[in-house]
Length: 346
Image 1 (tube, rainbow, N blue to C red):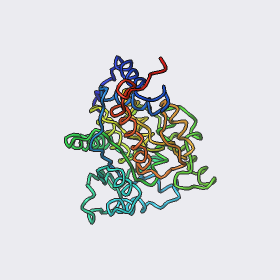
Image 2 (spheres, one colour):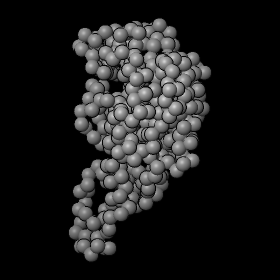
Image 3 (cartoon, rainbow, N blue to C red):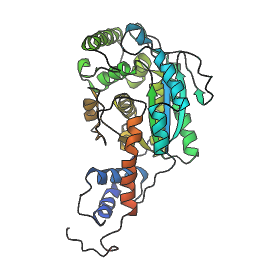
C-alpha cells in the first residue's frame, strides 16, 4: 500500500480566520458550529476566502460473502436491485444528488450479477462478492490494492473536472457487519458496542450477528494493521471508498462523510493517514447504535441528527447546504465597518 501524502493544515491561518469571522456583522459566536465549520473549510483550502466547486457523489456497490451466515435481514439480491435503482434514478441517493447538485457516479465494485444492462453503471468489479471472512480472508492483498487504486482513479478524474467537494456512498448487504469489525479493531471497543441492527435485525438477529463476527475474530490471528483489516474483513466497495477519501484529502477536497458505514471507512482512512480527519466533515449521526462511539473516537462533530440510518451517502449530501452556508457566511457577509454598524464587543 502506498504512502498517502495528505498536506497538513496551516495553523498559522487560525488567528486571521477567526479575526475575519469576528469582524462580520453579527454578534460574536452567534452562528455556533457554523463558524467552526467555516474555519475548518478555510484551513482545508489554506484560504480566508474558500470556495466550493463541482460537488461529486460516488456510490460503490459490492456484495459480502459473510451474508451467507445470515448476518443481515435483507436478502443479498438487494445489492444488485438497489444498484440498478441508483442508475434509474429512483433511489434516495439519486434523488438527493439531483436535489443538492451533485454529479452522481455509480460503480460496480463487486456485485453478484451482471449490471451491464444499465450502461451508466461503471464496471470495476473485482469479483462477484468477497469471500466469507468467518472462514477465510475476504480478499487477497492484490484485490485490496486494486480497490484502493480504483477509488483513487475516480477522484483524480473528478479533480480534473474542477471538483473540490467529495461525498462517498455505498451499497452492500452485510457491510454494517464489516464496518462493525473495523470499528472494533480500530477503536479497541468491545465488539458488542460496535454491533447494531443494520437493516433491521431483531434482538435475536443481532445476537446471531455477534456470534458470527466473534467467530471471524477468532479465525484471524494476525496483526490488525489497516492493510490486514481491509484484506481480512473488507468489502470491495468499502476499500474503494477508503482509496477515494484518501485521494480526495491529498487534493485538499472537502470530504463529506455519511453515517455508520462511511464513518468506519473514514476511521480506516485516518488510521492510514491521520491528517485525513482535517478534511473530513461528518454529515450526520446515524441511528445505528455504535455510530456515536465511532464519532467520539475521531473527535468528530456531526452536522445533523435526524435518526437516519439508510446509507448510500444521503446524510452527507443532506448536510451539504450547511457547508455551503458556512462558506457563504465567511465570504459574502459584510463587516461591522462596511455595514456601518458599531462593533460592540472585543
